[in-house]
Length: 562
Image (cartoon, rainbow, N blue to C red):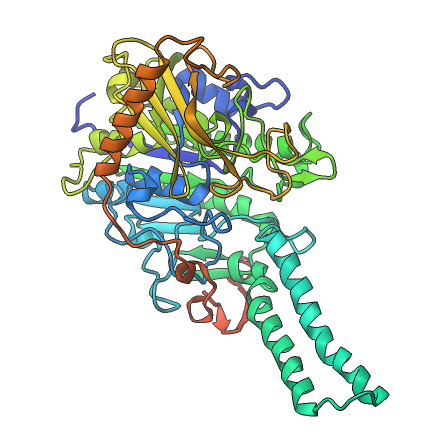
């Protein structure tokens, strides 16, 4: 491979897929032949790590090659760990340089199909400052937010469910006050002025409107489909979106096949509410979740077939991963709706536990990478940034810290040891865990300074709240919980000075690394501030005249087609 031979690049990212959900990673209840084919024809990473256990910060790190705390894309609050409103004012800062922008400057045609979830507008409804087209993509078709259970009218709301229940209770309590004040008035116990009753009635109405104007219309506000800057469905027809995305991806490949291209296909699968086409319902042995995984695998196969049909496969780097680990808490009665993280402890939203951050990592590039290679070294989603810069002939920005490492020496077999010595695992703005990969041996140490409290105790998840906390309802460890991940990947056997003679020296080394890491952090605007995360009517994307937003231009196009 020469640096002038620029390959096409296809990046495939699942949403909340557990590392144990694929056959090539040990699953025997779900069929994933197309992703397995990628693994057998390419290189499979077994210790591939997301930079965060939640989608927004993880995706920010993936696109920029930097810990999300460097761009302000992490939250100090337990409530808003990912961006919650399209009508909010937070997002991936415009001064961040994505790999799409690097490749765009090198002559690549760049397209994003699917989920974005990194913000939309800053100051006005149509400024679209955080839009994919302002972050290096020539073309965007998809969902600027993401898929939620709220996107299906028949499903139980997912966004801030427990907060909504509290808001309903509070509103009802306030609304009862004016009715209670009428009792002494009509019973003639004592006189209550009508003005007082009217004030409490108005207060109840204002409280209701203040929150119901956003939460009452979540599907209309957040679940929209866009092509470039234009809204084409509001609310989107969630059962058709996956088919439309696949169609757009294949059309993009057809349009740009004669020049170097980057296609980032960001699946809505396998996030709840697990919407699958009828032909996949009941298809797997693992219920609705398995059906959704198998439909995603089928879509991967269609994209690979398109590369084969256009004779592009040999000169195309294909990469498959997930933004974070499987989500353990979603349930339908007693049936789990989230993924399986294999032998690894924890899941989505759990800071440093392995199940929330260890994800699939598969690279295929037939003319360059040896088929069937398996790499057990620690690698990160942040590594994609310098890797794509290298193979696309780009130059890494020199005015900022890039935390990712170029993976090509490892993938090609020119290196046997990962360039990552330390990896830092955050939960929001809080550093929970540190991983140390010793330079002189294969040992990987992992120290937890903070871990979430599972509820009910011993269940391995936070079923009471739906997602684990980063602060407050957590356990602080002093000394930290230490594991040897190279011998105990399931984090079942914590080490201590009595059973590990190197305990004190390992912790001392990690403490020094934390201090050095923190010296490289600089203050930046916090994209998850209270002001940025609240819903703002003047920023709400709207097809039509606000607040009467709604359209379906996709159906209009189909109905007028010859």
